[in-house]
Every structure is written in C-alpha cells, then in structure tokens.
Length: 466
Image 1 (cartoon, rainbow, N blue to C red):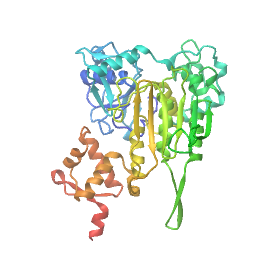
Image 2 (image 1 turned 180 degrees about the horizontal axis):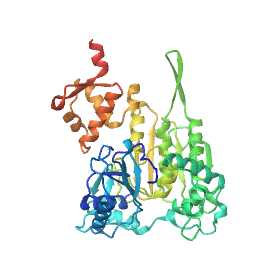
Image 3 (image 1 turned 30 degrees about the horizontal axis):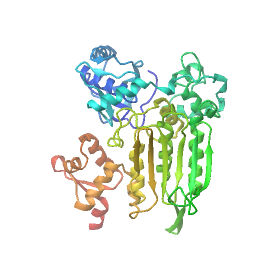
Image 4 (image 1 turned 90 degrees about the vertical axis):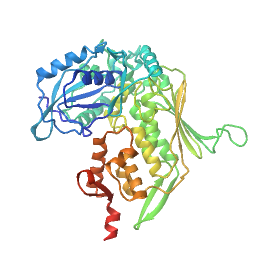
C-alpha cells in the first residue's frame, strides 16, 4: 500500500469518481469522461458519499472489469497504475489515475462524454465538433521551448513547489530529479524544458515566451480616455516573471489601488475592500491558467477603472466550453499549468473557483461578475457598486446550494428534502442530504421528524420561539 490518504473532498467531483460496484459500462463512461476533460481519479470500493463500500474489491476483479471497460472505449484510454489508498477504520480502496488525453475518446456506441461536476455528461453534435477541433490543435504547454535548457530552471522555485506539492498530495516531499520534472510536465521525454516548465520554474519566462507577461493599467475614470482626449490612465505597470510570482505581483498591484472602507463593529474596526479578495485573485489566476500561450503579441491585461475591474485573457473558450455552460462546466486548455498552480497553493480547489467567485461577489453585495467570450479573448468584469447590503456572516460558511436552502427557509419557514431538490435540479439526492446534515452540524438548522416526515427549520428561529 502506498500510504496515501484521499483528499479532503473525497466525494464525487470534477476530478474524482467513486465507484462502488464494478460495471464495465459505468467504468468505461468515467474513463472516457476524464480523458476528454482534465483527467481525474477513479476510487474503487467507495460509496458516493465517500465512505467505504460494504463489499471489498479484489485486484483480480478490478483488473477484469477494467479490461472489459477498455474494450468499450474507442480508442482505449491511457491510465496510470492502480494503487491502494487508506480509508477510515483501516479500510482500503483502489485508486486509478486517468490523465487528460490528446485524443478524443468515445464509447463503441458513438457517445462522447465529458466530466461535468460529479457526473459524466454526453456531448451534443456541436460540442463534439468543438472538442475535436481543440484536440487537433495539440497541447502547446507540453511542447519543448527552443533555446531553453534544464540549467535555466531556478532550483529554489522547484524546491518551494515540491514542498507545497507534498502538502497538497499528503505525501513525502520528492527530490528535484529529472524524472519527477518529466512527471509533472516541466521536462519532455528528451529532458528539454517545456512551456509548462519554463512558465513555472524560470525566473523570467518572457525571455522565450514574451507573450506570457501581464500589463496592469489604472484609469482615472470609467473610460480609457481622459477629459482632454488623451490616454486616461494614471498608472501603467508591465509584469514579468514566473506565473506564481506574476499572480502575486498582479494581486499586490490591484490591492494597492483598491479603495478601502472601514466600519466599527463590536468596538473593533473592520476594513472592507472595494472588491472581494477571492474574486480578484480568481480572475487573475483564471487568466493565467487558461490563456492561449500560442498567441504571440498579446498579454493578459488587467484594467482598473473607477467603476469596474476587467481582466482580459488572450484566447477564446477551449474545448466544449461556451459562455452558456461556462459556470457549470470545467475544461482546461493548459491542465499541466492548472495542476502546477493548484499544487503551488494559488488555486484553492480545482473546478470550483468560478462558483466561489459568484458566491463572494453576492455576499459582498455586488452584482455578479460579467463574463465575455470572443473568438480570441475572454474577459471577466467585476463591478464595485454594491447593489444590496452584504449577506449575513453565516453565509460565508456555506456553499451555493446550502445558501439556496437558507434563502428558501427565510421565505417559507421550513424545508424538506423534496423541496431542496426542487431548488437544485441536477444535483444528486445524496449530495443534498449531506448539505442539510452539514447545516445541522454547523448549528444553523434544526432537524424535525424522522424518515419521510423529516423537515428542517432555522435554528435561530427555533431558539427565538422558546
């Protein structure tokens, strides 16, 4: 057994699938969905709620089911080695890693699937066309960078990355060997630095990839032009360096230019930023992760106006992603870079950043972010005007589904499992049940009744009635 423990978010998600029963069809669908998306982990012998299954899965049964499943995939899906992981109560499960594939995979019946949240979703005709077109371009992040060599990597950056990576993966810190750098995509099979390696570990990647920099511009008003018709900016900075350092530098620039208000609460002074910290960082990190690094002559632009903040990233939406499904779906143009920044700690949880951005903007009383998709660029606009009073403090500890439940309770006084499902279409009953259990555990809800007669009320309201 390799001694690894599963990540904290052990239920189904964009990059995790829990397989309780070995069925070739179900396994094949998940293999294809992960390969066509950003890759992920299949956990065999685990229930959908993350708890160990009652029946133990043997290695022989697993190998047989995987072989049958691969026969349903066209072409077969490349996978890693199956490994044991430790669960609670001295139980174990099998984990199988599936990397993102350069090919587009389908089932033998012709269906093409991708990973959508914690489910496998079949694509429609136009979505399949977009995904196939994206695959034909190839993964630029894996290409070798002419003129760069292994000696151009900064060893201190590599050491810091490996330290954070070990914490993220909960495993011993590895040595900065070439084989490990090849594993994470920083070096190719011939030992040459890739676009990923140069962007993550070189002090100044712009020596080879000048398009990888950023430009920050602060305008005095709400338009790029001043009153005299000249350029209306009052500050302009060009940022360079490795991606992690640029993200921090960009955040510090925006932070230094943000208006800060203060209120006194419980005899303590609290400061409120012009824009929520998470929303700004997520917009910057998203631009860095998902821009098209093949596009020369264009850099990421951060434009700060009197009434809004715009982050513009070169490159349109990748794969099957459209402006209509952008919030709910996840697909990376640069999965190696995304993984690298996640392991650096610059991404809190893979696949959930946009949801969290929407949440914190609403909590702060702002209107939702505006996303703009053009053929060769993508933009995020945050407005600083507050449309409503900030949400109550307890909202900060709940996810968007739980927030809907609390809003429903404030209007109706109680909520049942059936009523909660009507508020969150497309979400599994088990996930919603666990959401309500968590709210009870936080002391926000009180569970009343048993079995089919169960309903929930606000704990505050219950306490106030006594």
